Length: 518
Image (tube, rainbow, N blue to C red):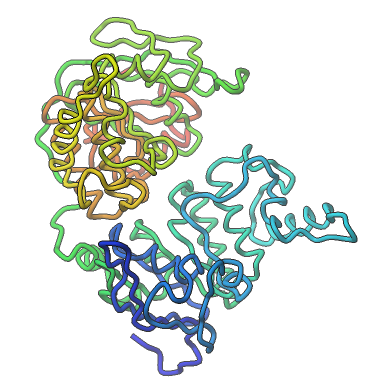
């Protein structure tokens, strides 16, 4: 697809090819982006989206790939160490992983590396006044003087975007910008993008949430296996077509149906209250009640800040300072003060942030899987390496992890395969209860489907699953029952036949309140 007037094209990519050892990440990628449009880019993890964006941002400079680029009518050649050069030309990128300095204020982060000076002194008043004006311009209610570490994840993401906008970008690249945002924050972001578009800013928008493309983009490019499969006006395609183009096959159902038969209660929580271990005066859990049955998938819904993650990390012994309430396993009261205790009791947790909390990125698949399970392979001062390798290979094979072998470094894997490694290492611990905190965050539709099938298989085998998800469709599609969190407490548990997006949201916002025990 190409507009007739070439002056309308702000960015043109010609046959870009990029190879890494053993992997062809991009192959003859050609793409035209229209000035002032919002151009969506979608594809499975490993399709080449991130590699392409890193070339545009100067992370991979000219000479490290084949092909050519044109930007604003001129040839674009970004030299080594050229990230700053790309920004000065007007190309800014907001990565999925936050790059802010937590100890610095919002204003300090936005002006980091380009602080205004008067003589030898930094003009702090100017930093904060200009930051305030920038935030106000886009309707962001954030204190310019607030330390970033005091902000919520959604606010941090908005600061990242504001930092990019402060560069007077002509092209703004957004990589999974809504993965940590609430629905209200997503709406705010969409308003910002429409404002930028009206000001002539071009945007490249990457997301795994396909519905977002239909809300905001003008064109969509689908990539698969390092190649462009199709570029088309957004209004000319539908979600089913995108999925088929991304995975190379038709998917008959988004959420595979399992054959689960829930058994007796294995975990019972009553009146659970807990404080933030870092700020003891702050109560994060204010009365939580729920039951978990053998072989069921219990979904936990709730808005950001409702206490979902605080609940499951407390159950795993790694967060809350429990002040009241009871936790029972098989009818016996237990106290869980550490992850090791939880693992010994048969509880495993796949955390929300796989890169920060779930993986040792520079280590191999083998080492990551066996790390929490070394006691099973060790005696005295030695590790039974053949047994460790065999167990790893079993999960490597059964979870269909896409890598050359078990010695592949985890940092080189796609997001979906990284998530499979996290799940595999906890399955290796033989859990009775598996907690999944946003297990499909930031992974593509094909990898999601594989994880859904795995969840069904585990539940059918008798493992009890607690699943947190920020996507209500996912909660409704995969759960047997749904417990809703609101303001740090449980607000009712619904059988899936009684649950809809409307009923869940009414409870998640406190419009409907219920003090029932399930």
